[in-house]
Length: 412
Image 1 (cartoon, helix red, strand yellow):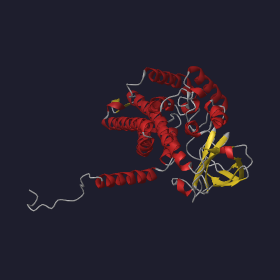
Image 2: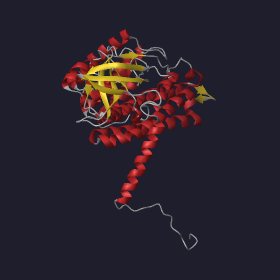
Image 3: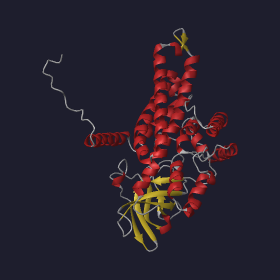
Image 4: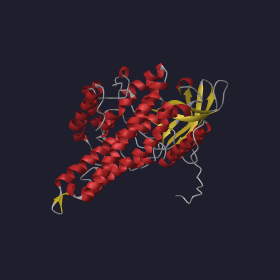
């Protein structure tokens, strides 16, 4: 892996994480398609705390390692080398994104009540934004869940789906549309809702190909759900702004974790290609296999580079970093899939069996092209920003380059 110029303490944490994942966590992985049971989760998280690798992104005051965003990637890639690594280290979605947002937006009392136990791995959480059609999905502006003021609080009504992690979660951060008021604009507001609230109910499961997120992706129903005023996360009407605070870094951490898994798949393919012989020699001496290997190296390195650039930008210019995270999300989600798919091809029949975990890896990463905004939506946003940026530059005096030159000499 690249990142040769890490500060000594970050390099040491990365090496410690690498050893823990490869020497402790990998041996505890369930069979492909299985889930980590609670007893093993508790045991491994306790070991991670003792080793000093638990909650790498969480501030030290809440028991984490306090990593700055520009150094998230090398640690999360090491965590992602095992499909259960991020769960064990408490840096898995949706908890990781929720912890980041709570740290930035929540009141001190909310941090004590929600962030502290989440950071310690004592509870899990979920994020309620996606809704059935025609509600919010890739277009958050289509939000249909509503919250209306009442005496001392709010009444929330709505129907969410793909609420990742909802089964067994301790609380949900719910996005709801709120009307304009004297001191707040019309828009969306985030609410902290305890899953024990009688007005919130986990509904039907949605059976997806991925298995890495505890709690699945079920429907969630909010019916006459009362929450007090202190359940508002941040300010009323600013939910869409906070969503960007959460989603830019969160989609990038997906890239980091899955790139770690792609490295695992690539290592599996390299080991296989070095040992298995075909047509009189090892597979890795054959031109067709070498082409697959080289293409995977290129996909891994370009993904690593765009992640590193985006993470650095998020640390210095969050708005520009969030915009670039769309580029990173599209590139990485597709490149990572290609790496794992090539690994399966190199491993042949065993690659599509449960004798190797590669087919399950493919199932884990395939939904990422849809989750956190479909790749098509991100491409649309990237293109709009590029066009608007160029128009602004030309209007500000940049040379316009779009007119063809009419040549009178026949082109000589």
